[in-house]
Image (cartoon, rainbow, N blue to C red):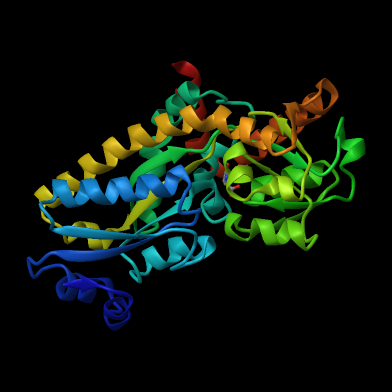
Length: 328
Ligand code: PCA
């Protein structure tokens, strides 16, 4: 049976949805909205994942990937899954930290700045994060890191003296805070709308990896990238809990195997591409360099403050994640 938007709308309650769409033993077609460009490695891994799922579930689950926010915009994907409008989808995890602070575990500046440390931090956070997601009616299947985060500007920036009043594209509340601390004016914009925002002057700076700058060809509007490697945030692929629970154990195991393999290959791809992106930014005329010492000192001070603020909102669970990370 098809799990289409129409089916989902017809099946308002989760329990109805399970009986109508999942318990008939037929192959299921699942639409999977993703937020980032079709050519981005996250989206390409969505397709790899879908292929593996078909294989490991013997065709029981047939996933169609919809990248670039084409089915649901990035900001709407989680809700679409929670409410059963689609059974599966992908989103940037820390974008949900305003609703569930724990989900900002991967947005803590200067705590885990290598792929290895980021993986360790995820190990420390995984159980707590999954419990939090269960409360949101979600089952996480896999997560995949972005390369380290740095700053894009349309001029040289040596310290916060140069950033006052700049309109800054943020991607979650933590990056909005970061911008405000630097005297900038944040506005939250999806990556899919980034080029337009830069072209129209809605924003003229942002924080991200080389990956998103490359995808959105930001050299058309901006001139400088400052490597900071402040954190490596993650996307995650999640399933509606009722959709998950309606699957038999073999199908769940097939999905999980596909997810585990995709997680490993997606993280490896991210690491492999990190320098390629910087080279491409430079090749297209951008100045790509490390943040200067004065700027970095300021960023570190702001970062420490942000971690403190996160711990206040994430509470004992947040502290336990950091303790477990530091103990390893
Ligand atoms: N790119 C995404 C999130 C983190 C990243 O590197 C973005 O800018 O939206």
